[in-house]
Image (cartoon, rainbow, N blue to C red; front, side):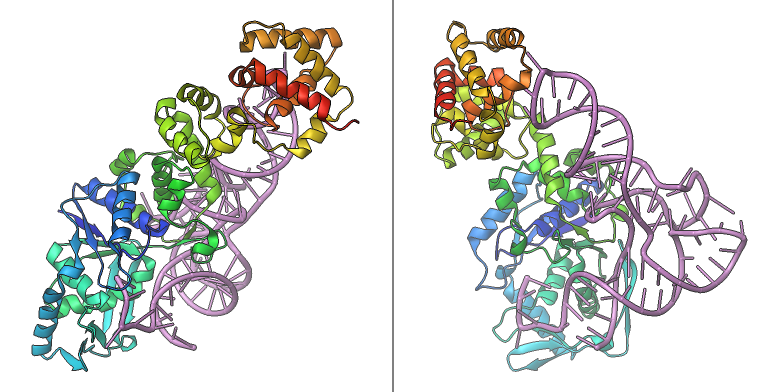
Length: 429
RNA sequence: GUCCCCAUCGUCUAGUUAGGUCUAGGACACCAGAUUUUCAUUCUGGCGACAGGGGUUCGAAUCCCCUUGGGGAUGCCA
């Protein structure tokens, strides 16, 4: 049976690259009906923090990943590593240097890796220095405890980033020293920033946590991340974890590093937002509204979600797009003002429209449209000459939902108030 | 410096394992047009790539070599 593991170090939030590694491991485990284990690499006592771990676990769950059994903590296994190291010491395969225990690397040997993604990779042990197993402070070194644990966990496939390629021959040496058979290795190309450089804070958000906060849906994150380096084929792109599990193959993974593209992620996110129900979107959007200090009735928010969910790329986008429906403190697009209001006759049209609107008892999109159409015919105007200035006047923006729906939600009183105000206060031509 | 990984449109990719069906397909982005009496959506079209040079072959995006370019590793971090 396949056994894989995801091994986060709780020294920070779940990085996008780690998230992708987790997804690939999970996909492979579920596809093969194997196990997906979690190992917490918290040997660095100083930098590790339980808070980070909590966050990482939560983010994994959020993306739709689950794991088998309880996570293993390396910090609780120091005595195991020490014992293994000392037995190698006793066998003469290692030596002490101060309080540290180092493994003696035999020179002039070729170590071959049959990588599932890259194929054959050969290293010469001449390039490998003697390896630290136990540091002088009594904590184990990464390559050593990693091997000890992978053996104990019965890991069959070590799937990790390309940055570990050079660790692999060192680890194979440890497998040999311990008299164990190494697992299969699969090194996946690294994920880079938009400029091709290592994905770092310089590129903006690099953790799942930040994307979550910025209004991205877990389905979109998982979908986009799994597609970086893997393709389901047949031009398929929008794919759920469940569907991907069925057809995922390690061998189909690309060996070329990919750049993380925010634009495409946003497109995926919009695709998923569109298919969500208003009911499901509500709590997410409510949260953004709360964070922005905006309060409103649930029904009104839902009405607007209905109107706006096809035009937002993140759930957070909703806040700026609909601010004018909730408060009088909303920004006015100056450029839009010049384009639509300060034009010959537009203010006059606004006044006429407002005047006619006053007579409308039932403020429905249909009734508003009837009035609008009547004025158009009488004055021989084009729709744009009324619609654009009106949207600008009532929302301060040039974009938005269908104008008549917007007017209904805003309500007759506010609509008239803003239209009149705009028509009067705006600087003259 | 040394070792290792990699190289198809701006970006993600299909095609490379089994060389011909590829005047290289799709998606994002971008640009036009259509629809929407409106921004957006939607639809249609356009732009746009096999890094360069040598081989092998009847034939190379696909195989080999070199160069160039990018990335990673060279910690008692993980």
